[in-house]
Length: 481
Image (cartoon, rainbow, N blue to C red):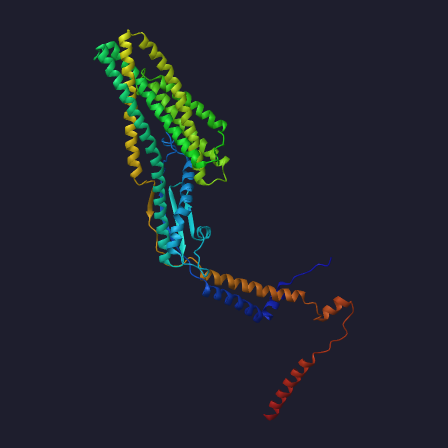
């Protein structure tokens, strides 16, 4: 193949010889850029900063109440809140209040508005979320951003109230049942006392009842935790419907659940034997805290791996599902340990005289039902307060800004790009034209193409006339002088 040599000096000469054409093409590109800037609408961007703190909901259980440095969980909560901020319930009112109908008489669609106007940006390793909203004017962008943030906070409040409402209704129903059970137990105690004329207890019976009360109190609290976790699981499964309900535990999650269940059973066996300050109790409490933290971290990982295509909201529900299932497993294991202790207490009661045994049993029923009633009443009051309170997991750090200048179009950048494109296209076209030009232009081209020597050259007639005319005009001027 014939080697092609490119002479940069020749290319430069070609460009200089066609500089008017290059300038014309460049000017055309600049004119197109100017026309675009003339018709393009300016776009303004308003920014606001939110702090997303760790939040709790109906799906949270005793496993989620512990502080854990779970980066995956924090990121998941941030993504969940970002998706809620861009949900239809929040965005559609903003579109209706700030946007004008187009030529077709319709407002922008939800999908196009979210994609073209709203941007959320979490700051790495922080609780800060930046919310950016664009508009055709500074006032429109600021108004849309402010409405979006307020709508987001209101939506979180509504969701929180709905969750707390479910909790309150569950506790109210359970409290009513506990009140009836307490009334029946007290009636039995009064009837037994009247029938057997027993209105006080001796030291032995007091020791027995005190020991029973410790175990019964722990059983009542564990039963309430179990029922709350089951109610939370039912609520989460109802929200998930068929999606994600069938996702199974990983072996790691199952291992942590078994470990936690064993530790809770061990701690339950210490009831009535050691105080909370005893080294054995403190040691097992530390082990339980570590196991719960590891379980929460593993749940977040598994949810992200098994449901990567799910929305952050659904991933959060899946995490709550696993946590409630773990809480149920732990409560059942703890209940099994407490049942063993209860069997020992039954043997102790059976060793008492008949009258004392009967009294201890009816008195025990009253104490247990009363303990449950007190705990339910306390939790119900907490649920009522939480239902009317505005959640504070989202804080507005910076209000929506009023932009001073548009972010689009960037005039200087666009004109610079169009100028560079014009120069490149102009120079490229003249260079390409020169390289593709195949006519004979010099004597060397003749020798190269035909392989014959050049004997002479015929001058251009037009050039000869011009040169001769120029010489004659000069001679005439000299003659006149």
